[in-house]
Image 1 (cartoon, rainbow, N blue to C red):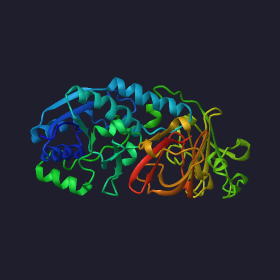
Image 2 (cartoon, rainbow, N blue to C red):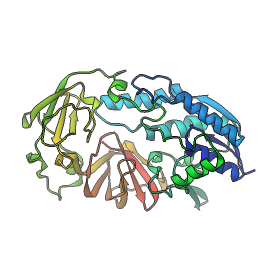
Image 3 (tube, rainbow, N blue to C red):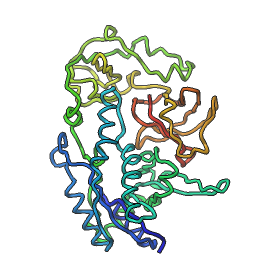
Image 4 (cartoon, rainbow, N blue to C red):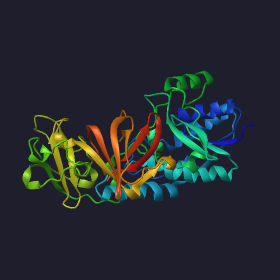
Length: 390
């Protein structure tokens, strides 16, 4: 027996096949279901899968003939993920709860629960890979992209530490999604044709304003349209990374009022739905929000210059190195591939490390750079580090 592994059985096909693969590899496998959310406020009708998830996970464990238990981490999830979400939205930022859930819950609180069950490792159904090598007598763990380019989920794990990776296994990282479904179907697993989960990790698909109104008040404010010809967009491409990373700051007098909203903190850069403003030749997109003045700024069309920026900034306190041995020194520059959202193709860019943080300048302007989201940088297929965009 290779060791004892606790698999986070979620009720989906990926974790189901992960458990099967580990069992085939000779591990002692235990299925553990995480109950992380009870509240249904704001959850869309028909998208509240908690009970169904548990039943499917239970059926898979029975089929694979592995022990099955449940752990309730809802209190920790609310404190460490949901409360963080509310705080970020209140500041006009857009958090990524999935990244937080992996760092704070799956590979922290869940890992602790697994270790209490005498586990040697925890495993999930993420499409990513882990390798290791020895350096100066110490084991270094590498987080690599999944083999399936259409399903690589390494971005969601961009905040993991070496200590967390040491205990982590990703059994399906070198398998494609279609192959995972084929394996599940051949085994007769109940999850074989089940749809992938959507929405907020463990909460489900939500009406975000309704969900956020649990803690954030609805306050009427103006929607201001900024023309694509605005002089602010005349920034030269040779401006410093510092200047370009600051983004655009608007004055309501420089545009025209086209509607009202119920709270600037309910909107994010690039958003189109929910504005409820018609009559323009092209669709309106959110290009900026000002939560202090409660103003939402919009522009017409997907190519509006306000949607694009050439650089971003990550404060020193928000920089995380998956590979601490590769951390950058002061005034060091490095060419890496960067991703600012899940499923985005890797973008060429340059990292510049300064005393206050890291400036990332892209080879091509990026659409929808959003404060609160995570930027992750890669060396080929290895995720080296990440940080919260300012």
